[in-house]
Image (tube, rainbow, N blue to C red; front, side, top):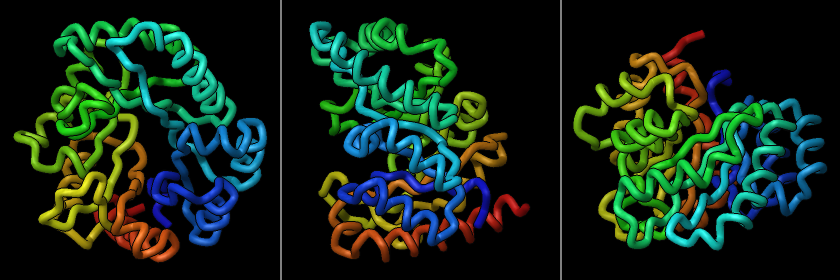
Length: 264
């Protein structure tokens, strides 16, 4: 298995952490990215022990971010996200990734400033914070909708960003954006898209759809990105096929691409 291949625990959204670890171990997956709510359900201390015993390296812990236009919610969100930071530190994960959070009636610059203020207490605890863009129709998730803006925001706040291939593969001058932001990228997430689709989310197993994943991953590697490539799939196609089958096919395909693009 390629050492840069990782599995995101949202790919088996309704499974327990124990089920995730059994599958990762069976497949020989070297690294995992952990949804904070799944760690909470298992119990953080217990989750850290289980992942440590598995020998699986941790890429990141990820969670939903702040409701930026509602400052009254920030205190509880900071408590929740501090637990995610503490879990990442205990796991040896270099990153905690957050969605940008809804902006409400704030404009882009106001939302960026609010996000910087909101995350300030989470910085400086031995783990980086990365902000993940979301689809433009998911304004309840975040105000950040392109990798280009993600890199700009990362530079502005001195944080990281996430490359979600399902969202950014068709961006103008993607190669240039990846070169400019290579040092800011926390992780690259891969899945596919079967077109047409009006369902959200409706991700597919890599290789099943229209996203030129090999090209996008090649651009990231050529830009100097040396981190993990993380399979993150969710939606009705994955549920209908079943997690075991979908994950096995995804791991085989992404491993094949990585072996070709970054032979070790």
